[in-house]
Amino acid sequence: MSAGTVKHPAAPLVRVLEPAGIGPAASRLVLDALASRHSPVIGVATGSSPSPLYRALAASGADFGHASWFALDEYVGLPPGHPESYAEVLRREIIEPLGLDPRAVHLPDPHSGDLPAACAAYEERIAAAGGIDLQILGIGRNGHLAFNEPGGALDSRTRVEALSEDTREANRRFFDSLEDVPTHCLTQGLGTILDAGQLLLIAQGEDKAEALRAALKGPVSRDCPASVLQLHGRVTVLADAAAAALL
Image: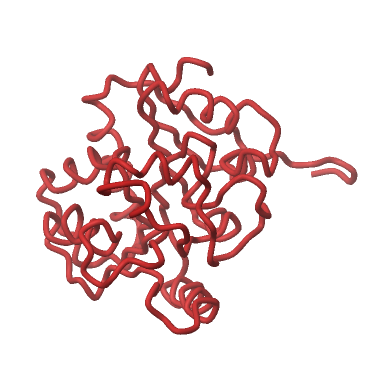
């Protein structure tokens, strides 16, 4: 590369699929990543978007015992064992269906008496595992990535984050009332996510269309945290027609 030139990362690869095809397509990408290393590291997301992926992985019959798994985030303020804690969601959707050793699935510790120290320890665990090879992602209606809400630093690391009212309203369906939805979480930062070797974003439904357009076609901005996808260079987006309608 000659002096004065800038190497731009490759644009995200976008595949628009029928809803029934998203899980199998995502599963193939994850299985390829699992086969690429002796001890692969997969970053996992929760929520409705990646659920078809996990069902497809469970149906694949593959052996997942050689991998380590790191969650994107976890609520702060829920008691241990709460059914909507991400520890429990991962147990139901990933650990038990895939036959994983629970010790191979890692989350930031929301019950620590020192949350910033727990966040730093999580970053150290990811680094000790060799870094994340493939990070699975969803996207929030307001463009959040993991629980990185609009306005935050684009190079942030794992930290405590206050959840926006839009995010809490979107997650209200999992709780008895809005008052029961946590106000804070621990989340991997945008800088942490960008460190992963490959990113896989799954987006479904018309309520994600504007956020996906802003993430992939708008400026890289704190107003849309998911716009950092444009900075990575190895991003695959699997979306249904409704989510991709504005691309």
